[in-house]
Amino acid sequence: HWQRIEFISDLHLRADQPATFDRWFHYLQRTPADALFILGDLFEFWPGDDVLEGGADTAVESRCADVLLAASRHLSLFFMHGNRDFLIGERFASRCGLTLIEDPCVLSFAGQRWLLSHGDALCLDDVEYQRFRAQVRTPSWQQKFLAQPLDERRTQAQAIRQFSEATKSSRKATGMAPADLDRDATRRWLQDAQANTLIHGHTHQPARHDLGDGLSRVVLADWDASADPPRGDVLRLRADEAHGEPSRLVPT
Image (cartoon, rainbow, N blue to C red; front, side, top):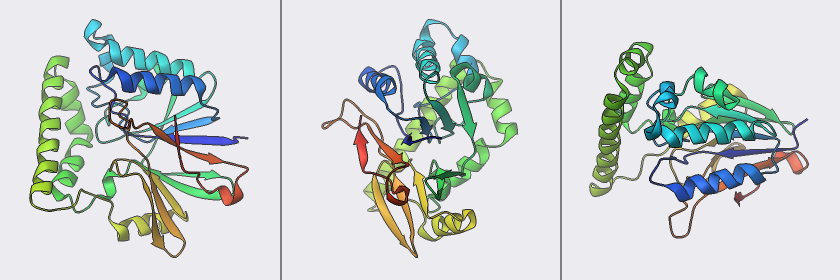
C-alpha cells in the first residue's frame, strides 16, 4: 500500500553538530513518505542502548529517540546497522518505533526487487577494516565491550574514530582512491538476490553506477548541514513512476 518510500544514511548525528540534527528533525516532520529506511550511521557512534539511561550527557541520543518515536506515528521506520552504530539493539528500536532489518535486505516495491545495504561489507579492498568489522560483529566482542562502563566505551569509540580518520588520510597520502564497493562482489550480491539495483550509503559519494547487464547501484548522500553547500538529501522511490526507477536525490 506504500506509494512513496525514502532512504537516508550517514547522518552521523552527534552533540556538536546541532544544525544537522535540526535539519533531520524538520525533514521527519515534513516528509510525504509512507516508509523511511535508514541505512546505517544515523549516529556518529552508538555505545549501547543503555546510553538512553545515562543522564544529561546523553541528551542528544534521548532526543533522537523522541524524534523517531514521534515520526513512527505517521510513517513506517526501518533501520539497518552501519559501521558506526552497529551496537543499536532491540531496546532502542522498541523505544523509537523502529524495525531493525538485516544487511543486506531485499525490498519488493513497484514491481521490482531492490537490494538494500549500508555498503561497508562490500569495500573489500580495505582489508584492515574488513578484519576489524569481522571482529566487532561477533557476539563475544560485543558482550565484552558492552560490559564496560559507559565512559570507557565512549573513550574507546573516540580512539576507533581517530584510527578510521588516520586510515583515510593514509590512503589519500599514498595516492589510493577512497574505499569503494567491489564491482564483482556487488554484482554477485544482486544476482543472488535476484535484484537489479543496490541502494547503499557508507562511501559518502552519492551517484548512480551502471554495473552492466541491467544491474546498478545508487549511493546515498551523507548529511552535514554545516558544510558549504549543506548536505542532506534523500532518495525517493514512487510507486507511480515508470518501473519504479529511483528519482534523483531530493533535497530535504
